[in-house]
Length: 245
Image 1 (cartoon, helix red, strand yellow):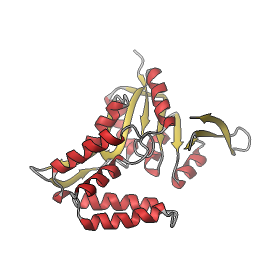
Image 2 (image 1 turned 90 degrees about the vertical axis):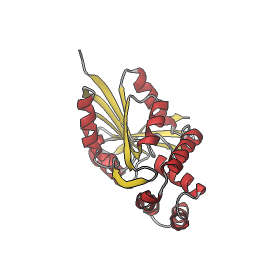
Image 3 (image 1 turned 90 degrees about the horizontal axis):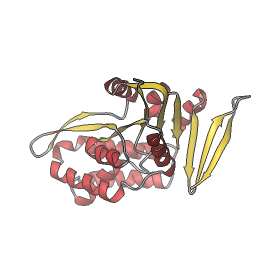
Image 4 (image 1 turned 135 degrees about the horizontal axis):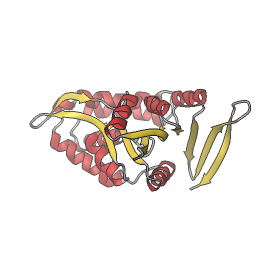
């Protein structure tokens, strides 16, 4: 029996229009479950990003949220986190990109095994992945104590090539005609592995690697989708397709 083909998707910024991790952090701040100091710091960095004060403003804001929440885990009640996670899924799970949502559906119809690999917490990834028909998923894990988290973390936002290798073996999948879709430098490892890598709304770092490797680049902006591919002659990227949403 032939092995099943697969497609691996990043979630945050690739299928989901925001970050599940950030959204749960916002909810925790609104609830008062995280300190005022964290709220003040992240609000300042968020403003710098919104005002586009410099090229790395978003990355600085995003990493600050990750760092401050990770370091506050031992003071975060598990019940508060679960309440916030449920609100994020209920209120924001429909906020997805059309390009990746449609690609996901198309590959599902073609019989592909769909994999979600996310740096967000597994308690968020699981209901989100289930909603969109993924067959397998993996997310960050926070170790739990009795009432609070212990602070120990199993991270999944990097090393996605190793994670994908393990999942290919676990589910007896084939790399032939495989797909991977990601939006940032943390997705490079899994994009290198597959036959059809797609850099979707890529960061500057991922864009440069996509161009160097000749990967497809897809951009969704307002009500248009632009697909760029390396041309056959001088290797320059050309607009291969446009789609109206």
